[in-house]
Amino acid sequence: MRLVPRSDRGRLLLAVGGTLAIVLPLGWMWKTSLLPDTYDLAEMGYADYGGGPEASGSGAHGHHHGTAVANLVETRPGPPDQDVTLTVRDDGERITLNGTSPGPTLRFEQGELVEVTLVNESVADGATLHWHGVDVPNAMDGVAGVTQDAVMPGESFVYRFVADQVGPYWYHSHQVSHEQVRRGLLGALVVQASPEPDVVAVLHQYDAVPTLNGEPGGTVAPAEAGDTLRVRVVNTDNALTALWVTGAPYVVAAVDGTDLHEPAPVTDRSLGVTAGGRVDLWITVPEAGARVDFGGTTALVLGVDPAGDVPPQPHEFVDLLSYGTPTSTGLDASAADRVFDYSIGRRLGFLDGVPGLWWTINGHLFPNVPMFMVEEGDVVVMRIENDSGESHPMHLHGHHALVLSRDGVTSTGSPWWVDSLEVDTGETWQIAFLADNPGIWMDHCHNLPHAADGLVAHLMYDGVSSSFRVGDDGGNQPE
Ligand code: C2O
Ligand code: CU
Image (tube, rainbow, N blue to C red):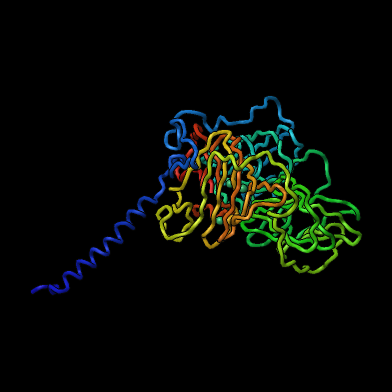
């Protein structure tokens, strides 16, 4: 007696074959997605030369000579002009710095040599400090497993760099950052060339409670009628925030630390602040006061409150692509040495053995993503395309990039330099930068859970290598 009638055998074979045809590749995909216990980031993924010359025998996978990341330090000798210690502590709910979160606002004068000592009192996973937007020497960039080892409880690490870029920045941990930043391991940093009255507004959500400088609801800054204040907004959250001003016009003085050229007063528009990004507003405080609202959840009152309840948000946003007027930048993007694509998508697959709908870069899942290879002095154009269904605030470490165009529309406004750029789904942006800061630099989404889910690539200079390793065993988990 046949168990399976002849006529059904074929079907059974087909079914078995079909199942194997699905299961075997899935098994293979699962297995190849597993991350090693520790790994050298530069050995993952593939080298992308962006159409430029390939490295002189020391590309992403042959980097056993050249400069070590750890040697890319500040070269100015001598004692620091400023010397700060930040002690981080896990208080169960928040992670504090010198007892507060946000941590203290660090203020430096342009050109000062600074040393910041990170002391880890009790953050069990270890911690680092990344100077978001400050183009520090690579060894000072604070990325666990790439530029240093995480600083474990009882340990310390000294960051040393020259504060040569003016503007508002922020510092945060780049160890298990999606968790540590959310829990408050962050603070603001302001570098000034000359004294100018300013107010710093650090936006951060603690357990989904929006705060301004740590205060739910917001704060009042003392101001006299007639004062012109530079309001420095630092968005430390994972999503774009809209701001609008009631009681006075505002001028967008700077974005990500760089002053805009001939910015005009704005009266009837909101401004989007990219996650991780900063904007400076100039506001002249009228007799009746002025008020800056952030997303309708927190507000900064300057002097007296002219509005009371949450004033309505204007419908339209300032478009920085056409705001202000053009002027020369010193960067000729038409002479690009390399052109990279950073195309963001999403698909089913495995990330470290876990099935899911994961972010892709140029069609690949982390860690099989491009390593953007450059040589010092290259002019680089990057085309960031997002077709993933969600917005991504893209952040390049160690460099500032000039926005060239959005969806094929060229910038007609002020030169607009960014370190954090909101790339909405359906959009394509072109940016350009000068590769003038050797090292291995993250280029990732600053919606930090997205980064933890693989939306991370790196920019790597020819001949630079890292002796640090990412992975469970070594304890380094930058995302
Ligand atoms: Cu604000 Cu890679 O970080
Ligand atoms: Cu994202």
